[in-house]
Image (cartoon, rainbow, N blue to C red; front, side, top):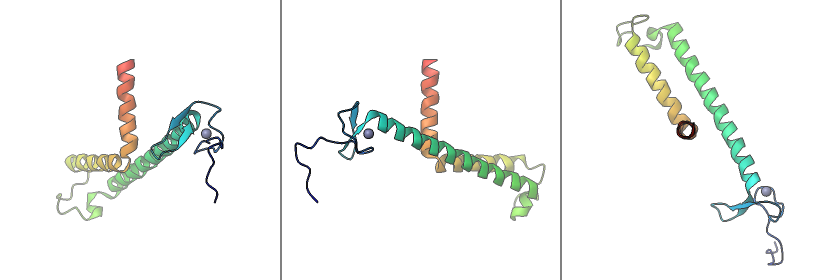
Length: 125
Ligand SMILES: [Zn+2]
């Protein structure tokens, strides 16, 4: 494979087009990309994170609903919690907190950016 010669114009790592057309920004891996290419890729990543956060939330909410439908006893925890089905609000609160913590752990980056944009919105409103 021939090495690039100095006369060869540098190209964008993302789209492979010459860097001359448009604003550019260096990457952490040593390459250079168009700002518009980096923004497009970042928007795509944000959409995927949001989709994954939504799916995870739906799955965890489904788990909570299933637990509510079956009762805590259905999960083999009846004896420990005294067979609490409707009156065990403490158990539901603990379960909800655990599921929210699981969502934060699974979607750390999404939560980070969501909290960050909420802070910025609060600061600039
Ligand atoms: Zn590009």
